[in-house]
Each structure stands twice: as C-alpha cells, then as structure tokens.
Length: 230
Image (cartoon, one colour):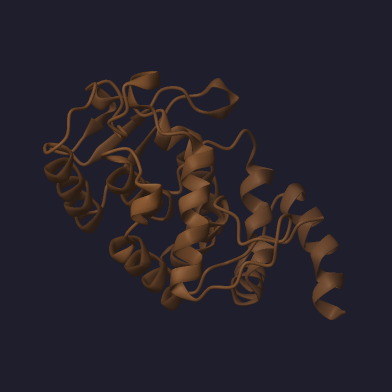
C-alpha cells in the first residue's frame, strides 16, 4: 500500500550537503558526537543499502577500513553478510573517525554518540529525527507520516540504482538479481524483484532483456504491467 520514494541524484547531493552543513540550535545542543555520527550514518545507508538498525548496531571491530568491507553479523532474518565500502565512503568514515577522536566514546559501537548511557548507541529513531531536519534543509518535501520520504527509502534508492547499473553492465539479469538479493540480505529473491517496478525505465529495460525469467518474476511483471498501462 506504500509506494517508496526514489531519490534523484540531485536530491541525494542536496541531502548530503544538508547533513554536512547542519548546525543544531544551541538550546537543543545534542550529545557531543551525535551530529557527527548521524551525518555519516545517513551517507552509509545510501552508499551501502544497509538498514538503519544494522548501521546503528555496528560494532567497532566489524568495520574494516583497510580492506573496505563491513561485516554485518546481526542482520534482519538472523543472517550475516558482508557489504563493501567505496573509496568515497571510506573517506567519509575517516572524516567521522577523525572528528570522533575529539570526544570520549566507549569504543564499542562504531557510531558512538559520546553519551554515557547505552554505551553511546545511536538509536534509529534519533537518526530519523535528524533525517527529517536534513530533508527540510535540502528543500525536499516530506508528505507526512506514512507518505515519506522515509529513512528506509535511502535503502530502496540504493537497490534501484544498483539494479539500473547491473542491468546495463550484466548479460544475465537473473544473476544480477540474485547477487543484489544476497548483498542486501533479503530472505527471498522476490523481495529484490519488487524493486524492478519502482523505476519505469528499469522495468521496461529488464523486461526486454529477460528471455527465460523465473515464475516469480513473471508474476510481478504481470501484476505491475497493468499499473503502468493505467
């Protein structure tokens, strides 16, 4: 019943710029390292497709900047997976850590607010609060609760952009879907296939290239085709 919001490239740039420029009001001064943490978390969600709960719960030893990989050991559906860190995101991590050195942290969670309570754990609810502030600063309208954009839509946008790129670069669309499904920690391939219909160009391109698609994909295409016709 909810149609996810797909951020444009320009909106992502504005959102990241808003996160960098955001300065909290002195009357509402946050915990010492909170702004630094959330600024980086929002970028991580878009650049890796991680869930906000996964990012918030990352332990310090699960982020390997030398090899540019993140070990997600406590994901949804009780699975484990590895996600990669791009060169640009790696620079953001370094920037985050350099700023964190100015504050006392527990050293347990990678994203540490600097608060003595909960060992510095940053809550997903807090990330969403700042995300809404970034949206306002970036001039991206929020249509209210239940309409978005939601924080989870950063993950959805990552999936759609990844499918666009994989569809262009790969000769085997089915394999690309399987790779992305495993990368994002989906419980079934159908969860990943649902992203196909969120972008009309992606949907049309994939349909024309998929000669022997599975029955699961067939069901989704038949269901969504009528919506595009309407």
